[in-house]
Length: 61
Image 1 (tube, rainbow, N blue to C red):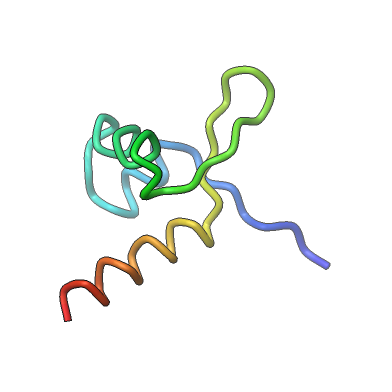
Image 2: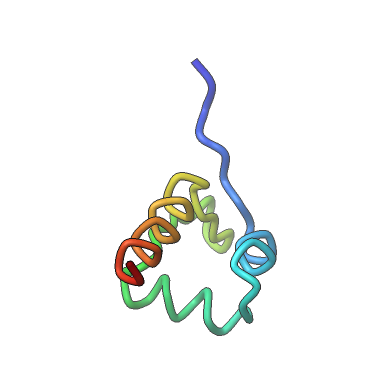
């Protein structure tokens, strides 16, 4: 069993082609799930990023 891939905020920024502020805004609003590793390391599960993009595509259709 492989563990889920966790992305850093800069990796999520690159994948979505948005700013750091936008990624943190999506996290704060609950639109993009994230986890806290340790006390300060925010990570975004790759599956959460895929779910977010899927929702955007469904809303646009």
